[in-house]
Image (cartoon, rainbow, N blue to C red; front, side):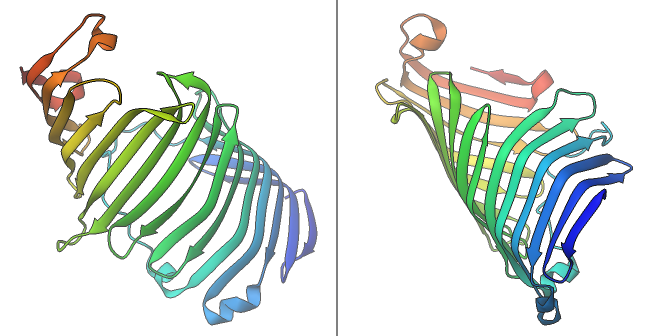
Length: 277
């Protein structure tokens, strides 16, 4: 730390902050903290304001292959014994860089958060950058698999005929430990009119993500595309899926008029999958 202003018991400002470890480094031009440390005696962490500016995160983590999904993350034991909240978290001009890859500019980030010992709640989240903007909220349980996500994103440039995307995800615990089930709804829009929709029922276990009653919705185009299947996690993820076409029009994708009826099945890792029609 190059410069310190304020007092740790209430409000503190740090300038020129550098944090290094074997797998990476974080630099912040400025860090401002306003909190209530006296609440720690009551096992409560109260942060009124936490802001960082000019942040650069250099990730030097190894390239070793790891399982795509290592399982639902448990909360550390000590964290289950406290509660807390952050009234205001702000990030100004953040940059993330993975090893020697091109840096990713995060722009501006704001959020409020709360922790009750079992679940994390993020509210009023807003992220903006050269690519566009996103806003939403999230509630994630750690004692049991539980996730509610409401996300809206707008792109600075049109992508695949869309300039806006909304995602609504709900996963709730089942009777089996470490498993969850729920629904997802994705909507792609252009000038506030839906041009693409996806909805499905989901099941999540430590071994795989499965879906059923998956429906591909494209307003203004006839026919339907439905699917069921699973994505198996592991060092070498694999896919097993079945797609059903009923009078489907894929003319814009294939460049010719189509009325497709039939089924498509695929199975195996993405780099070497097999299937039948």
